[in-house]
Image (cartoon, rainbow, N blue to C red):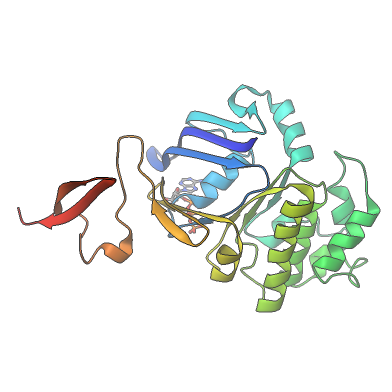
Length: 270
Ligand SMILES: Nc1ncnc2c1ncn2[C@@H]1O[C@H](COP(=O)(O)OP(=O)(O)OP(=O)(O)O)[C@@H](O)[C@H]1O
């Protein structure tokens, strides 16, 4: 079953009379237990997509289903309930995920408020992110890296069906980055948790099952099992990946050659 289904999602921000189109016609299906790295240059729309999947934003156009529920048709209260019970999120700024005056252990158990409280799971999560001895310390007094690891334990506390993480290893060294990857993969294997992780960290993207690259607000490419593909968009548009821009620069003209199983693009002089 698909946990995420985006159908022609458009997201427009309005700021001081100026409209910014952050996402245009995003189609994406992610199945249960998949681990997806969301890649792309700065400003491409990755965080926007993550916020939409978290139910924190409602799309300007298009439809979005989370666990089969059309979020455009849910009341705010039903959406809040779905988020608390089924979604875990790690925001880009680790401190924003936590309640500073609560201890690490209290932060994790607080995140279980919408489900059955499970202290054993809470202890196990703290151990897996290397914070077994930090359970009593207030989250607000932890280092950025510790907060980032704790944020992942908090996000997984309710055994979410969907885990969303924005740059979850940005403040971590290699060893604690590996704990984060292990925990995400373990959640997928053991609990069937689907994960979508925005990352610039190659060791994270290579460890996950699938990559989705957003460029200029669109899904431009996907990678599965080490193989990269471009995605043909709604109107037949294909983004030429930057590594081929020296052969077909943006704005150049190309000839289309029909092949038995597809087409080839060759640069043409106008
Ligand atoms: N609240 C907002 N109001 C206006 N424009 C916004 C807002 N949030 C994002 N944008 C714009 O939307 C576009 C996509 O931004 P987004 O943060 O989703 O990109 P990103 O791929 O996550 O970038 P980064 O890797 O730098 O975090 C950018 O042009 C950004 O300036």
